Length: 102
Image 1 (cartoon, rainbow, N blue to C red):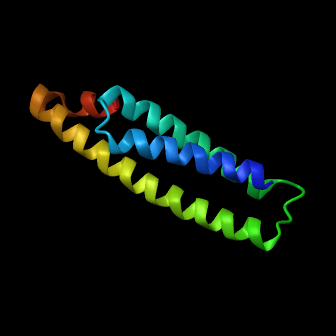
Image 2: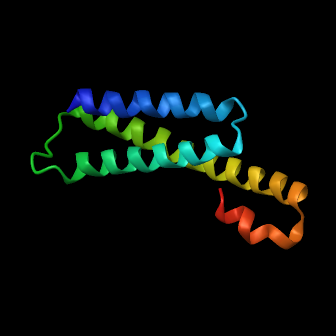
């Protein structure tokens, strides 16, 4: 179980690195998809029939969940910034279409 938790942590690190390097709008979509994969993986850990963790695993999982929550906040902020940039570029009449394409 610790290996799976570590893999999730590594994926969060990779996504955070991309997010911190001013991603392009198309990269935001990939980041959101990856976050959904992380969420599904975290959920599978919690919903596993053999969900018994020792204290090290619980501590590590709590750290991973906190990092994931922070990542989601950053992704949402980046989506809003990207949306605002695109709206300025495209114009107000296409706001809804621009938002749908994120």
